[in-house]
Image (cartoon, rainbow, N blue to C red):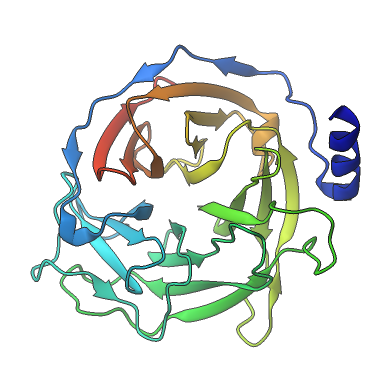
Length: 289
């Protein structure tokens, strides 16, 4: 088994996973109780969540594949925040596997159609659209960015390492954190170009043995914290330089009672909202960093 693992990591080349560095701090497990529920009309598979930049007490959410190509305005208690009570469609878009949502300072939403459970998709897409009024019936037509991983080849021996469910904006750049089914690590990529007439190749930044399947990520409003969610734990990364997130200090908080949480968003500089994909339950965490 050790020889097989060695050969596997060697085959990854630049994606070989480093050993976990210093500065890790594992907290006692945190048991959470729901503070609310997302109403059923918003969908049952919330896979992405961000806080609106312009509409007070509004969060934008998306659903996983099987749901319409639409965004959902939510109030903090989980109610659909549109006057009609309906989702807001994204014209011309298709929901192949919407897995994450990010937002920049200007209110542009990055709808990340980057789900890739079996690493079969070689070309992914990101829909970029200005956040609408919560009472709109549709957004404006989105800008479509096609993206690919620099290390994903048709003949690559490395399998199940190019799924992604976590995206966030840092210093006005979009970052993706992969959900690596092969080794429960994660790799960080950055979108450096936004060409609309060609495929954009992501830039590999680093990889880290996070020991879980990454399902969501968000940056605090002051950009001092990066929250990374796995099925079992919440990681808080801080005291990092530039985008060297994993070489700063790290706090790992095992979660209990949350079910399969797959989305999170900062509600303030040190407060987080989480939503699970099993019962549409909302959880709140106050950080002491």
